[in-house]
Length: 83
View 1 (cartoon, rainbow, N blue to C red):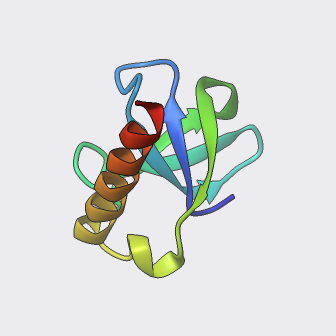
View 2: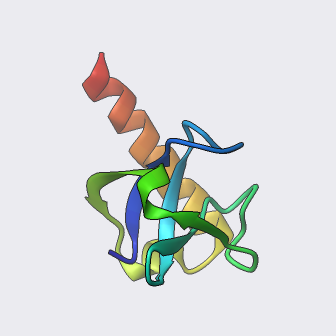
């Protein structure tokens, strides 16, 4: 589950794509590289997230810059598939 791209269903970040960086007992820590950098992950309840089938390789989220780039690529392909 670490590295999986998720979409937030609740909260201020509703509708944003994030990456799971840590797992806990009914929650996960997520980051997006900008509002939520790797140094300050957000703890989210798993029932407030929509999980995608995409899992990033660990080198795709070593830094905030790489994480933002990976999410931009995912969002652009996701939008193309929806249309």
